[in-house]
Length: 328
Image: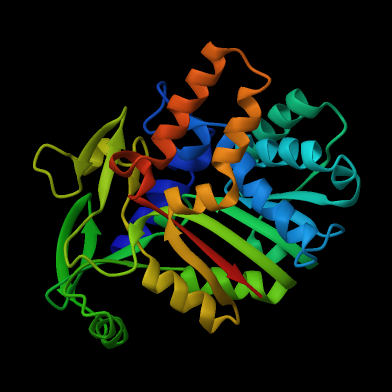
């Protein structure tokens, strides 16, 4: 089978990696910005609140997260919106796009733990199920979890019995690679369908997403496996695919040029593309930390400040991760 089908089964198949709820943080395979600091979500919510205040967003619309894991990000955003304007939690509707029933259950349990019965969540199995006049859609690290093809010198990767071999790539894929000057690396599958589904179901939309990658191709393989915070390149001789399959996370760097092309083709305009550090600071991260400092003791403030350094330091998440904002 093609590598994209193999990766899809690895992550989302019957016993796939994401079929059940996965721990993130010290006890899991990796960290995310969401698991690092609650101020990550607060900053994005602050940006959304500014759009609402400027009349660029609809307070009677939807706030939707795609791939919400346990629901931390959405809950942190709701909490901050309530701080800014308590009335917003009465007018906004809240949703999560999540296909796995066990993960949906974990999300609902956590949201109830945070807000009791005050916040109701609508689950959508797929982006195409969302129908709304307006929605602010947010996602963290979803584009790196789309299946991808592996291309090398005009050939495409296929997998048989957990062994990778190469065959001639189809002409359409080669034309796409030529457009991006890609000779070796990953070609994501599904960005176009995802963008079209969002555009088709939502009349007016703001979509904000964070992920790691660049706006250009590297002409090298970035695909890798995460296991308990250890990283194994896919072609590492020490990595046995049969052992890692469905048990460990598999990911790759996002080609944001491809993402932007897919969303523009679906009718979106690119509002911003920048580093995570620049985006979060522009969204008000530092202002939020200063507000926190006025009501917290010094030890609590220092802890939060250290977490924020992880989010914005150039040598950590600050430059490696990018934010893209599309509007329709």
